[in-house]
Amino acid sequence: MVLQTVATVKGHLDFSFATAWHPDGHVFATGNQDKTCRVWDIRNLSSSIAILKGNLGAVRSIRFSSNGQFMVVAEPADFVHVYSTKADYKRRQEIDFFGEISGVALSPDDESLYIGIWDRTYASLLQYNKRHTYGYLDSYL
Image 1 (spheres, helix red, strand yellow):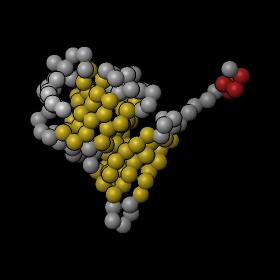
Image 2 (cartoon, rainbow, N blue to C red; image 1 turned 60 degrees about the vertical axis):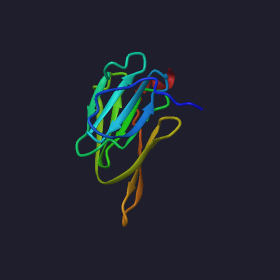
Image 3 (cartoon, rainbow, N blue to C red; image 1 turned 90 degrees about the horizontal axis):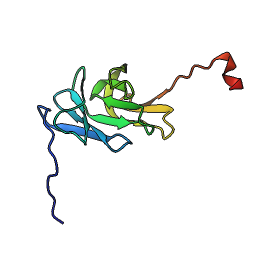
Image 4 (cartoon, rainbow, N blue to C red; image 1 turned 180 degrees about the vertical axis):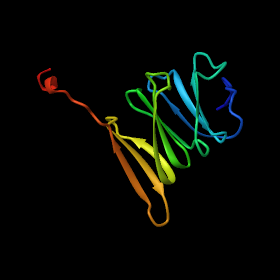
């Protein structure tokens, strides 16, 4: 088996730690020591389509939801960012807590986000669920 480079992306300033593919197969994200997550479209790799900045450290974990509507980006400690892919990554929710992050995962139905916390004393798994707002007439529709 001969391996060859088929494409190169440029923009990050340091070593990369994470990558994830969007379910559509055209978009992927890379997480880097330079405290950024860059989103790329495989159909045009001349520049990234979004540059998302972290708060404290390298981007260590990236996950897309199975429906492709959200991308979760975790720093090594204290911060997890949830971006709306439908809003071109311009809308986000930041989850801020105290702890070393060992990884993130989404449930197959995209209803729950799990964050692994690595700590010698208080190791834990945090679970966040989507909040739904239902109106009075939703039960009839």
